[in-house]
Image (cartoon, rainbow, N blue to C red; front, top):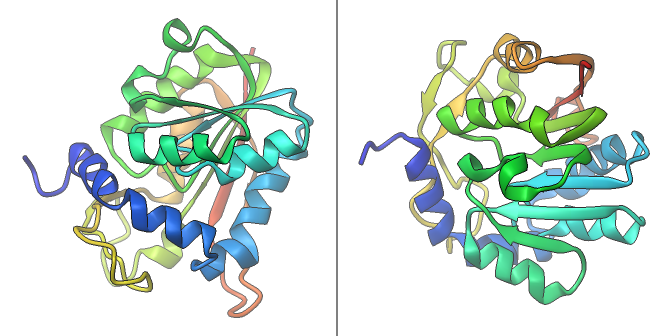
Amino acid sequence: MKTLSDKKIVDSWKKNANPWVTAIRNGEIDSRIETTNHAIFNAVVETSPKSVLDIGCGEGWLVRELTKAGINTLGVDVVPKLISSAVKEGTGRYKVLAYDEISYEVLEEKYDVVVSNFSLLGDESVTNIFRNVPSILADDGYFIVQTVHPIISCGNAQYKDGWRKGTWDGFNNEFIDPAPWYFRTIDSWKSLYVDNGFYLIRIEEPLSKKTNTAASILFVGRIEN
């Protein structure tokens, strides 16, 4: 198996499901509590959806919040331990599903919003998601993605698409074998939308109140019919 690959991402997250659940539920990730959780929740709610699909829902925090807001929400994730943890919380609908299985033929539903919060980390898998999402969106539906900000996360590496090694810096010592991730420039993210029939309504850069730097980048796209 390649050291840097989509499969390696999945393998890593399967190993780290338990510490991730603990980190989220104990509020161990400051940027999420302070900035990015609110940003993605507000971006979805502002579209006034009746139904939402959360791709890469993890332990289900966003599904729970949207369900509490009266929105019919389904969360899917490839990691069974994350889904079982979400189900135990008792709020929302969940399904174990690999990214390459996400399609209308499998889900047999269409959604007003498809959302992905820091969960589009791969190469081919992300390309396939953007290709398949239009088939599961209702007319004039939205595809909302929040991810690491390319400029902030680039570091000293060249600003171009490519695989990067992962790290668990800033997390507790229960995490092991960090997942790699596929770096994309802002233009590359834009192209994923435009090339798959979306128009970008806006791009947000939620700011950290502590550092006054971008905590993430958030894309809101709408399907063109």
